[in-house]
Image (tube, rainbow, N blue to C red):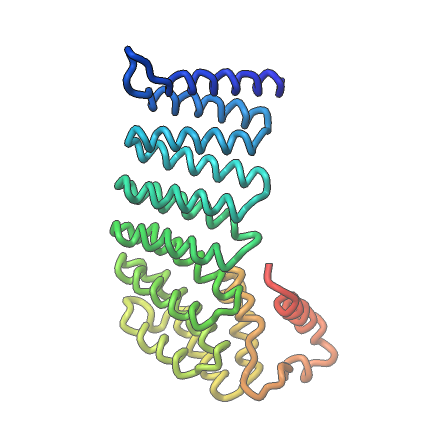
Length: 311
């Protein structure tokens, strides 16, 4: 089966080369037909799992689409070349091709396609390179934002923010979450603004900046429905406990369902939060030597998970 597909691929390449030849009666190469034949060859190589040859065929297809001024189709072919590198587990090369395709989509006036391709590239690279994934998600968000597609933009910004937290780049995460919150406010999704305020507080407290955390809550009082809400009360209680170095109070809030069931990266910030000068020990665990086995050890396990590396 594979041998048959490879033979078919070579037949398509031969036809493509014939399309490119000129003669007395044929003055111009037929770039469109050549690109079409290389596309067919690429599919045959792909089906035969000859990914390197498939990649080369897609690049040839892209070359002749470019000659024919068909930039969108050229970009599609280059993106496919990237996917062939992905099949070979060559992720950095795969991302390079996809980024190149995105630039061509932009030049062709199809920014939405570019943003979606950047998002796909981010998902591909995320398991092996979080920094690059952040860059790709932020670029994709920027493209959507320029097109006034804020719902798509804010979703991608959220991915970038969570990865910045995971990378412990908390200063950048604080800026990114503020931008998310501003976008949610613009599209009037106020419940998400509440969640982003909680995320901000956790980030700022991990940065050791109580003033910034408190400011985020105070600024959120102007959001419709925030004052007196479950999110608001929880953050006021958390800030009070943190300011008064009340380990029990901080522990209760950080291990409440409201915070524990946030996105994983923020939930881990919550369960690992310590009050200043607390030494990382909870009064709760010390004060309940007999009945404390039900709650404290589980939290300790979760903390070890956070310290040992984020998934």
